[in-house]
Length: 265
Picture 1: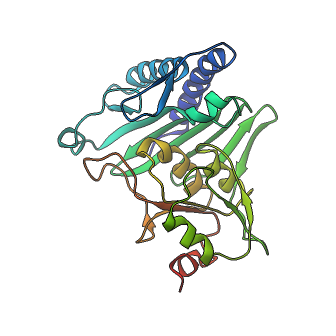
Picture 2: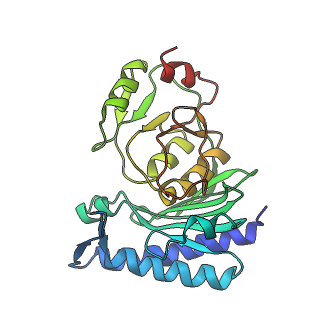
């Protein structure tokens, strides 16, 4: 299990990447489209270069798999015991809209599970971080505090996607109790549930593995779970050639009986 000094170093790397992102955010930046029609900016690329360079120097024995870097094929990845999984700028669409809801995501994966995670929100200055088997923390200008998921209140709060309302999600939402609907960009939804601001985030639309790993580590350390659909088993990484996740749900209170509700039982 990684020691505290490694987590602190990765937090510093995320801060460094966030500084580069904010420099672009405050400028008149260009937006380009990648082959999959997703947007990419100078901020994505600048953050990627910083993170890849510093992680490679920190742990040269661990490969770095970044959204904006080289994507090794599964034949190579299948032999990885530990590797870094990075989204240099999660929420590029939010970045382009200038709504502040984007983050830097860095996770260390060991045997298909995230064992260290850092999520940094540059516009708020908040860092969420955790090591597997230890407490999750939020660090900001007021200091560093442990965070924990909450017991579901009388009316739960659920993150509802702005742009991914497919039939599966609509059916799932009908099974859920009366709730407050919330919206937030990028992996900050995981962090909001981890610190007890919300209770559930169902996602049936496509996401990539680098979108979820850091947030999953923080959420699990805070007492929650990320469960893949339809099995409702813990979400795992590096299991197949594709880097696209299955659908999943992020839950805070694991005793609430979400599986029965989500299955319609």
